[in-house]
Image (cartoon, one colour):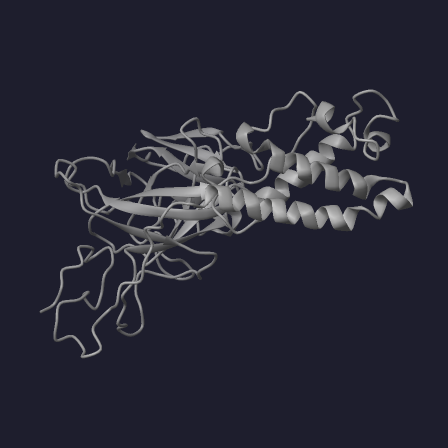
Amino acid sequence: MYDKVVTLGDVKPVLADVAAYQLEPFITICSDVYADIVGVPFPHKWNEVKLPIFYTNSLQQDYALINPDGTSVFNIEWLQEGIVVEETNVSTLPKPWGYAECGRHQGQQTGSILQPLNWSWPTFTCNTIYNYMAYYGTWGGSDIDATFGNNPGSLSVYTDPTANNTQQKNPITQVRDTNGNLQVVTQYGTTGASQPAWPMANSPAGTVTNDGSVKWTVVDPYGTAIRISPVPSQTGVVFQFNLIAQKPPVTFTSLSQTFDPFPDKYLKYFRQGIIAQCYRWSSDAKVQAKFDKNYQIWLKSLNDLRAMEDRELEEYRFVPEQTIFGRGTSGRTSYVGPAYPFNYPWR
């Protein structure tokens, strides 16, 4: 890409006059262009990423995500879509499923409400938060006073949620240890008779602590957690969350770095952005004055890129809750959620 743009007369002084294949400002320009491309409110297919799956747990609203290798999850910019699948009866085929509607924010809740509401939601709604903003239990803590309850303690049993006919009944699967580390259960079993020897404060993400046959793993405070609503009941079916997100923009650090995951077939749209940004970086006032015009051409290029990718029919649609004559005909139930996910119509 450097070779393609450095030969342009007005661009060459910006990139080549300092030194051959100088890192800056070219890699910063590439990073800025990439941020513009993924900054549009459009879910690029090539920028999608699957989140690590997690399972609903008794009275637990927040779930700190952790990769299979024990690392925390950072490669998420915004949630795109998702579904939940019932896991309690794992031998049932096909497995019942529902939508997980993704949004920007929702408040912290408990598993109970103060008055009945006529809900007609997706099965769950969900959003991302930082791990440090999530709710964590206390090992050995009381389930009364200033707590949401469901804390683990001596000889607490964590049952694998993927086992057949398992109900939601585990203690909370994440705690803040006595040294302030954020810990997540990564192996089910039975906790020890006394509190485990937690690692020192500010231990790195991935640090493992043995607690009887249970394993706890430290997560990074600035990693990603998921908040769901409604809060799962104390007992009930287990749901598996399968979420898809958009990745954050790539930050370039060297000229040998590829544009992955940006597809090669769209590189002309990337090149136009680089040319515009090169005018912005020029020390020549006459050349810099060309930035505004070329940036507008670049913005049109982004629209063209979106049009190239957005030629398929959408599956999303509006479904009326009831007819204009009320509930005299079949329609959705008055409440659809994890306790009643199958959406049978009233007649």
